Image (cartoon, rainbow, N blue to C red; front, side):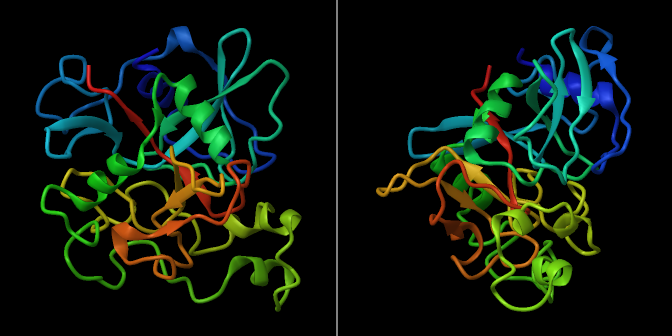
Length: 273
């Protein structure tokens, strides 16, 4: 299972599939290994699986492997067939007997419309886990404790944030009464221009560890619980990455772990091998 994320991404290729689109199906047994061309050592010899970065944190030299891009998802059928899951469709309902697994979304649009519970299960199905708060902060801040992923000050346009209008209003009309659960989970919200972008599209939005899109694009669920029992997602998204904290400190704590909408995504972590 430890290389499943890389194997599945190789199997499906670098193409996203929107709602209702047909998608190729392949067998996990036919999958090849990941690229790893930009790693210092071959992926199968390093401390982290392919497309993950080794991040140091804490005073005791702790290490964690962090996905270099936000996560997309695939459906794994009972017979082993692998099919891309549409980034703009919730994972609440999948084919009977199928499992949702995370894959690293390099060059493809990451999975939105996902809850913390579902994100944790998708990481586990890929042999990984959700990142802990301290791990997510370290991945963002880098070894120098920077406020933003790329430096000490905000740089306009560096990351996917600040969309002028909210897509819910663009899809369903003006005002606050259109922010219903149904509308917030409509594919329309992420199918409009200047919404969620493929992983790595914003070349300046990269941390010192070589990790992309930790600021903006999609909120990212982490493995944490508030005193009220809610989940926590960090980083902001393509509309807002400022209201709930500057840069790496951005955190939203108002929602249950079962909550999802067009802005919620995730990435996975793993212990070094």
